[in-house]
Length: 372
Image (cartoon, rainbow, N blue to C red):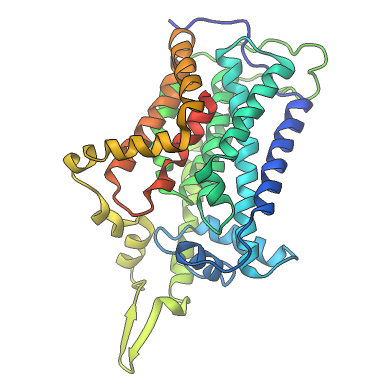
């Protein structure tokens, strides 16, 4: 049985919101200061070119990212389009850092007897540790899709812990919607499902919420209902955002760089304008050839270990081990939630044999920062 503790996390105060915003703004300012100044190559160059033109990105299409990026590129006054798309990644990097603070704040409340400003300070250090990790920083200063993905990962964990501790019906609806929106951006969101199931299995009563102490009032959630939304409503909130993938049908045929005329009667369709082409593009089925065999995946374990150690090093290793042992003793469900996601992401990375697989380890660095 999991032990009930008196330091169950209360609702957020204004001070917590201000610290989260401050952490996010600090990270955003850092990324802008170190931002790539102009046009890039590879996938980043594709984003800089295709998104402002409302074109179609490589599979899986990233429709939500494209639409948000198009708005950003046409509403942001300074810089050229290439700079604006780099800044778009920086913005979501700041959002991810602020949300990481909120997740770390929750985890501390669930696993350690800290409160007030000591708790805020430790959570802020965890968020800034992740924000300044080399790989995440490198992706936050170029036009790439990973900072938005990590913002969604942090948001989903934040909502999961909120729903688990309050039983909030509105929180459950927000979680379903966030999960659906995240699926319209990065398909590895599916790796979060075992973590959510481990923390939110049906029938578990919500953790009682104590009253806020003096000085912490002002932002408590007045909703006290523990009635969960109907399963149909949650499924609808999750599935509805997936209709954003119709963007591929809309813009796929209208992106001339995907249809190259080789001769008067011969056209090379990089995006085949058929239903089969749409399904292949949206599902990312073309990447299936990059999947390794189980034996080849296991052979990647030493390389993965070197990659993780090179990113995290001894500074993170001891705190991570300490918190794992502490949580096993005090809050094993919390460890199951974060650990299942970390193991699932690691397993996926071992099987996924692409050249830039190092960026797929970013969710592991997020989990490590929260633990540390």
